[in-house]
Length: 94
Image (cartoon, rainbow, N blue to C red; front, side):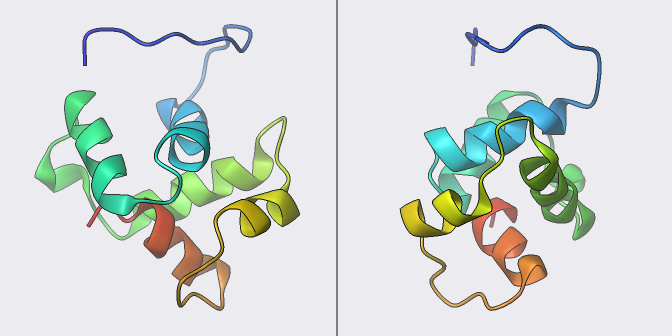
């Protein structure tokens, strides 16, 4: 990746806050595509831990414009029945 437009006001914080939006709006829950995005941002295979999808899901839920109901209607879970499973499904970057 060589550039990224960010239309949200600039803030200091964890990059995963912005990556939550990417996982929802750009890659639409496609974990392989999300992984490609993160690799393009400089993540390495070692960064893909079990905690990464949980952190990104937490930021998705805490995001300024979060709307879990809309997320679930737009990107219905394939098999997930808990938030941890949903985080793994959308953000595990498998």
